[in-house]
Image: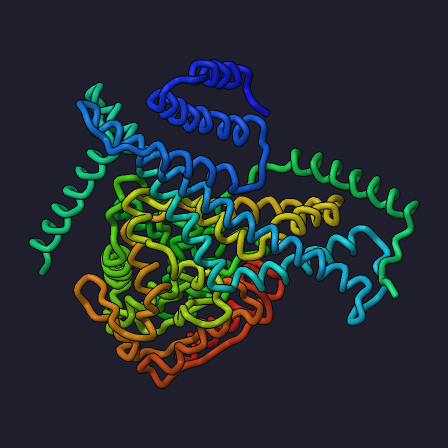
Length: 211
Length: 353
């Protein structure tokens, strides 16, 4: 699905490029990348289309094609936006990885449940109520989850998700603090700095009074 | 041959019955008073910043033993020790004539993010012990460490063996690298210093989410489906509500102390492998030469027995007793069986020493 605005812009660029020299085509390619990002975001955020992780990958590729080093008077701000975008993409990729692992756990849990109900190794009394079925599902789910959760790659995927979230949060905070500083408002970094100095002072003071 | 033998008509009836019972439970829960924090009378006797020391009012003739200080974990609130009149380890100890103190670590604020393990182990815990020593004119106290509080108590005892007369550890992690320890496996891959640098204090909600994800289906879907079973039992519903309040009443963790605990204990297992230094003092468990009672729960998924039992081979004391409770990490505080068994065991062990 494509938003009407994007469609109109694309059509305009196609017509403008008809029979034009390479320089204009280059501009069109750049615009396509830009519009492509809009489309992917539209699909990913508004329409919920595509497989998990696919949209961030497409976005990443398009951003990489468009990449230019920061320059000019707003160099710092450009860098800040780029870092935030990069950390957001990292977080999306990490989320997709963990989701994929959890989907695999769910599939394994279903297999275990089917085997427990009717497989060659199925043992136990008949399941005669939905509650018993639910409890058996929980048992199978926990066994499937435990098998995955104890693995090194599951721990690595979780750690990557946490690290990506931390870095994204760091960049978000940095942007908010830049904004706050522009209005001469106190920031968390400044307050942390005061707390750290206070803590060090009190530690020194206690040491001085130690018997 | 399938085991599945659900009659559709009965299943429909079961759904209707389940819905009715859940609605009944919701009505009963709405009528209950909000649970409090602890139930036994006590006085605040000492305070340092956000940390408070309470002394419980006696409920029986004194047993003539050294005062007992309970050091709870930082990750949950200590009123689990005194949840309700018939679910209270503290009441059980008071009933046996013990003089019971409890440290409440409070809720760390943003200003506490630079608190280190040194502050908790030496300054706060040490300050509480010093207060009790002064008050009673005794050289040493009996110390009961619970869960992570047991690890802190072990560190304090190793650093200051002269201040602890007897040490009781309950569901206390010692070896953080045992194969069943899922939490440890997950934490080993985490850059904890960077996490604290960015997040500051670690939110209690993040810890809760981590604990739930150790057994996600049991601790969410199955637990709450179980409400239907107690819909017509107001006392059980009140217990449920108290437990829910306690489980999700998780203080944020002071950033620096959290990073140190994760790095030194979970990632580097220094209590076992050596190299642990807190506040400039080397923590060597061989310095723990007082009698030690180590209580663990056989079905503990947070602190498996294998994580706590190695204590025996690490301490210097020859007077070591291990006690196994048949239950889980939470059941050891609140199950009906624990109420009689644990206070009796602890009091008898202390009396003998």
